Amino acid sequence: MISACVIGWPIAHSRSPLIHGYWLKQYAIDGSYTRRPVEPASLAAFIADLPQAGLAGCNVTLPHKEAVFGLVTRADESTERLGAVNTVFLRNGRTLGTNTDGEGFINSLRSSVPGFNIVNDRVVVLGAGGASLAVVNAVLEQGASEVVVANRTLEKAEQLRQRFGSKVLPLAWDKAGDQLTECSLLVNTTSLGMKGQPELAVDLSRLPVEAVVTDIVYTPLRTRFLSDAAARGNRAVDGLGMLLHQAVRGFSLWFGVTPQVTDELHDLVARDIDPDYKR
Ligand code: ATR
Image (cartoon, rainbow, N blue to C red; front, side, top):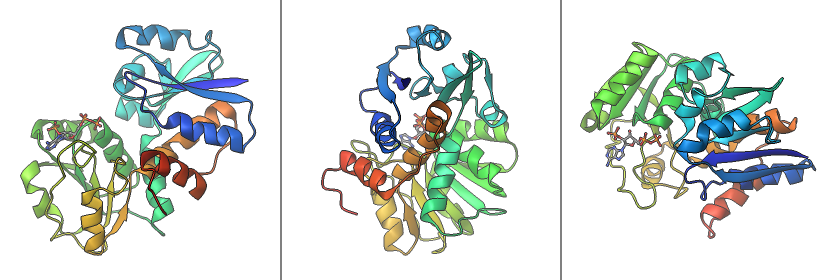
């Protein structure tokens, strides 16, 4: 029996067990994937004890991603650039850290948008928090020529430029709408539009109609931001795809099978978010 889990504080709302549980059943693997609440004070011991605890590894969610980066034995190059880990696995008794959020983001777009390609393109990212970090790293790795980062706290967008270099262009939050001309991908990484949060209000009138618009928020599945974009003719991709696609590599590392993100899995998680969900 192979065991993995997701750690966070709190962790009760994580949908990762639903995703990995579906795949374990689908591929008839003798394995388990559970939620484990780990408080910050216990984090270092939890990671150090992974090999003895009979775990193949774990996913890491808020607020532990940066701290776990400092606790694993080694991380790959892309994860070093990020300084945040969302997946831990064991090799030869050592704890290795990686981050699959960026590939989850890109693979979700690839699976929803035929021929998705942002080489030499301008991308506009709303927000400069933890989720933005992974998105900015991913779009630069995909060859974007510039990434405009609009954030309420400008200093945090400036820190992203320091981390990733001069292709990152920090922008004041209230100027976001002005910078949408020639943008081919617009991403919301803020918590605005999430259930219980204020709506995201950005003027989309300058956005080319060919641009792809995506939101990392997936509660609700279809945010106002996405429906506004779709209503004016933009292709709108919801945030659930990123959640599903980021889970693929962890499953493969722990359980040895590269799983498929199927429509059936998408609908299973979508109905968990919204019982009235219909494709
Ligand atoms: P995460 O790790 O999920 O990205 P975070 O690090 O708390 O979470 O980042 C939340 C993002 O939403 C930030 O970009 C935040 O802007 P600030 O850096 O100025 O805090 C943004 N955000 C949250 N509430 C906002 C609001 N009312 N208006 C504009 N931006 C907001």
